[in-house]
Image 1 (tube, rainbow, N blue to C red):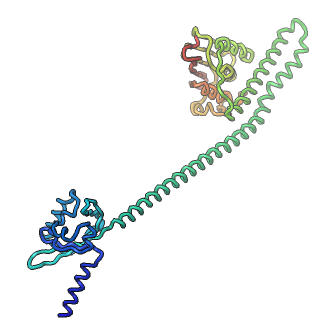
Image 2 (spheres, one colour; image 1 turned 90 degrees about the horizontal axis):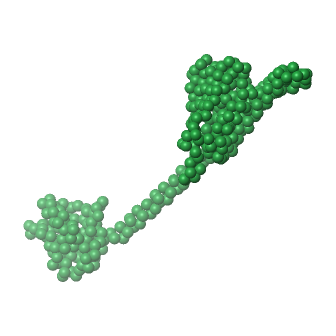
Image 3 (tube, rainbow, N blue to C red; image 1 turned 90 degrees about the vertical axis):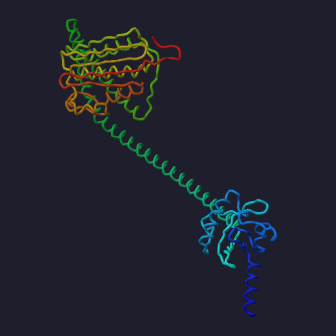
Amino acid sequence: MPNMEFQQESLNALFEHTSEGILITNSEGRIIRCNPSSEKLFGYKKSELLTLCVEDLIPKNLVERHKHHRESYNKNPHPRAMGKNMDLKALRADKSEFPVEISLSYFNREGELCVVAFIIDITERKKAEEKIIALNNELEQKVEERTRILKEALNELEISKQKLGESLQKEIDLNEMKSRFVAMASHEFRTPLSAILSSASLIGKYNKTEEDEKRQKHINRIKSSVTNLTLILNDFLSVGKLEEGKVYANYSLFNLKELHQECVSEMQVIKKENQVIIDGYEGLVKEVYLDKQMMKNIYLNLLSNAIKFTNEDKKITLLTKVDSENIEITISDEGIGIPKDEQPKLFQRFYRAKNAINIQGTGLGLSIVSKYVELMNGRIEFKSELILGTTFYIKLPNKKINENYFIN
C-alpha cells in the first residue's frame, strides 16, 4: 500500500511540475484536468481552463478541421506524436497564436475515453529554424552572386582570349600580307617599270616630226604603266588600312557624272588595242552624298579588271543610274569569266582564279571594292560565265544631307 501511494504521488508530481503543458479531455473535447504548465502556456487560470473545450484553444480557422480529427481519433484511439512536419498553432487567452508540438495518448475511466495531450511551445525553435532558413537563403544568394561574378569573369576571360586570338590572327594575316606584298611587288612592279624605262629611253630617239606617232605610242605606254603602278599601290595602301580598321566613309557632296567620266577617261590610257569602253549615265541627279575617293576606287578597280581580263577587239560597258534614293552601277565585260566553283571566293583578299594566274594583278582589288561598298551601306553582286564574261552590280543608297533636303 505505501508503494501504491508513492507511485501516485510520483505521478501527481510529474503532472504538476513537468515543463510540458498537459490537458486531459473527455470524448466530447471538454477539458477535465490541466497542469500548471498548461495554465502558463495558454494564459488561463486552472478554473478557466476547466470550463473550456479543446477547440477554444485553437485558432478559429482550424476549429472545424480539428473537430473532424478529434472525432476520428475517438473512433480509433492510439498513442501518436503530432506536430512533426506540420505547422500546428494554438490560441492563448489574449487571442495571440503560437506554434506548438503535440503528442496524444489515451486511457479509459469508468468506460469513458479520456485523451491526454502533451503540449510544447516551439516558438523559440521556430525562430531558430527561420533564422537558419534565412541564413541558408542568404548563403544561397551569396553563392549565386559569387557564381554569377565567376561566370562573368570567365566570360570576360573568354572574350579576352577570343580578342587576343583575333589580334594574333590579325597580326599573322598582316605579316602574311607583308610577305605576299614583297613577293608580289617584285613581280607586279617589274613589268610596268621595265616598260617605263624602255619607253623613256626610246622617246629621245624619235625627234623628227614624222616620228610623232611612234613617240606618242611610247608616251601612252608610259602613262599606262604609271596608271597600273598607281592602281597597284592604291590597292596595297587601301588593304593595309582596311585590315587595321582605320578606314571610314568620308561623306561629301560631289558630281557623280563628272567622276564617272573622269574614271572612263583615265582607263582609256590602259585599255588594250581595239578595246572599246561604252559608258552611259542615266538620271537627272548628278550630285550625290557619298565618299568620293571610295567611289573613284570602285570605278577604277572594276574597269581595270574588265580591261585586264578581256581580250583585244572586245567591249566593256559601264552604266551608272542615279535617282533621289539609289545609285546603281553596272560594269560588264566580254572577258574570260570566272569558274563556277571559284566564284564564292572571289572577294577574298589575294584570291585569284586559276584561269587568271598568268594575268597581271594583285588579287586585292575586288576585296577592297566589296569593303568600300559595305562601308557605304551598299551591296555588290556579280554574274559570270566562262569565256562569255562577267558583270558586276553595285547598289548604294543616295544618302540625304539633312532631315528636309535630299540631293537632286
